[in-house]
Length: 76
Image (cartoon, rainbow, N blue to C red):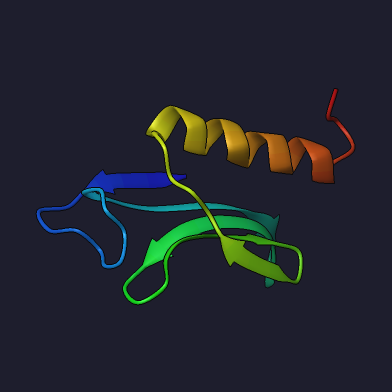
């Protein structure tokens, strides 16, 4: 997990954070939450990629952990 504050927004994101939360194997992305110029906040889960509604850092980390636990069969 990498989250850092940036001096300018990463369009179209509306916050001043850049982040990449990754879970996978060598050469294989299983779960990734990130934001990048032009795409904004989004989530990769397996082969799917979809928009992600960023609310807070705490929520971002919780959502990421939930997806990882679900993928690993650890979800409650």
